[in-house]
Structure formats: C-alpha cells, structure tokens
Image (cartoon, rainbow, N blue to C red; front, side, top):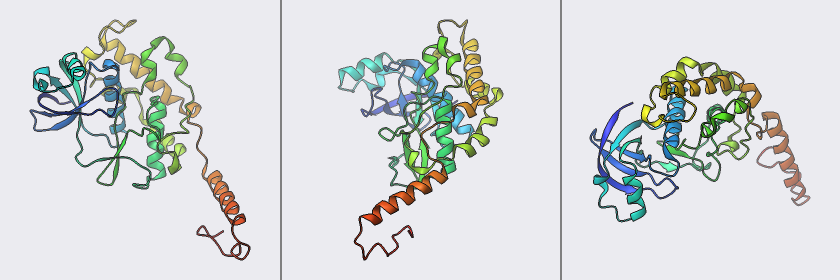
Amino acid sequence: MPRVNALHYLAPLRGGDSVPAIVETDDLGTYVVKFTGAAQGRKALVAEVIVGELARRLGLRVPELVLVDFDPAVAEHEPDPEIQDLLRASAGLNLGMDYLPGARDFKPSMLTVDPLEAGRVVWLDALTANVDRSRANPNLMVWHGRLWLIDNGAALVFHHRWSGAAAALDRSYDLSAHALGDFAPDLRAADAELAPRVTEELLREVLALVPGEWLAAEEGFAGADELREAYVRQLAARAAVSRRWLPSGFASEAELRVAEAARARKTARGRPAWLQQVPDLHGN
C-alpha cells in the first residue's frame, strides 16, 4: 500500500464520531484521512484496510487506500481544541482514502443498482459482519454514476473480543435494513461467485497490507504475524460455511412478485368502480 506524507490539513469532516479530515499529501493527492487517535482506535483502521482491500479484489469499487504519515504541526491552524487533541493523539501512521471530488452520499433514487451488484455488497457485509451500511447510514457514495463503498471501520466485530470469534463463524446476519435492500440483492448468485474466491491465499495478501504497528500488543497473540493468521483463518472459515449465514430479511424474486400483485389489488380496491376495469401502470 502506498505511503505518503501529509502536507496540508484542509478541513475536518464532522459527519461522524471519528472526525476524519481532508488532507493533501506529498504525492499530489487529496485524501480523507482517518486517525488512529479517534474513539474507535486502530482496529477501525485495520477493518478499513481488510474489508476495503478484500472488496477491491472481489470486484467492488473502493477508493484507493494509502498510509499517511501525519505530523500534527500541519494542522496547527485548526481552531477546535477537541479536534486538536485528536490530531495530537494521531501523530504517526494513519489511513487515507482517495477523495472523490463531486461524489454524493448514496440515495436509492440516484441510480438503479443491479441485483447482482447489490448482492455482492450485501454478501461482503455479511461475511465481515459490517453493522454500518444501513438505510439511515449507507456508507456508500455515487461517483460518475457508479456505486463506491466507503467507511468499513465498523466491520469485523469479532476482533473486538477474540475469545468469541469461533462462535461467530456461522452466525446468521440480519441485514433487513441494509442500504441496498430495495434492489432485491441476488445473494445466491453472489455467494456462488464470491465464496470460492475468499481463500487463505487471498486473505494473506490482504492482511499483509495492514501495518504491523496497528496489530501490535493484541492480548492473546505473540505478535503481528500470529494475529494476521487469526484474521485469515476466521474469514476463510466463515466464507467456507457461507450457506449457513446468508442474510435473512430479503424476499425472493417470487415473493416480490406476490407482494407487488397484492399491492396492486389493494390499490384497485380503493379506485372508483368505473376505474377498476382500467389496468394500472403494472398491467394489473
């Protein structure tokens, strides 16, 4: 993963608890930087790297990730004392995500998401136990008419308590409130495509990108390499039993047709008698 130096601190982003910032770096890039000193700590950045780079290798769109060396002196003009505390606590290595100029927060009315693409996103979120891609907080962007995944730091819930990781391997995941639930995600097709690709080899490639200093001093592990292998084993084992945890809460295509017909009948009952003989827009 590229490593760059922060040159200019442009502005904080106050939309969430972590308060990332837009930063210019010495590779002439502009990035949204997430800081190690934020409340979620280093594990949120570990999740960002693992889930983001796994998503990329599975064909989903994720802004480029870079490691950012950050000197709080570049942000000495920031007037908010709480943000200054955050920045001082984040001296050193942090995570940057390529800033997508003109990108907009996803809303279902913006574009039609193909059921297979929606299924891939939902499948990845279920694999990685991402609890933060809901209708209320989609963590998706639309850029040049395409869907981009951002903010994966709330995933990998198991790594907050490794003693319970084994019990989470085949735990089902209810994603009925998922941001893409209205697009009839094709989870079966996504599972057939993606599960065989989540191999230990692929996961080791992804885990090699996580800085060792973000993995240090984890209780119960001898060092960063042992912890990397624990992530590899956990995610590979979960992918291998994907049929046990495929998310519930989504209707099948047949169920969607039945529900649509029921809605049409309900609408017809509320129409004047003379109009009930006229087909509605769905042809019913």
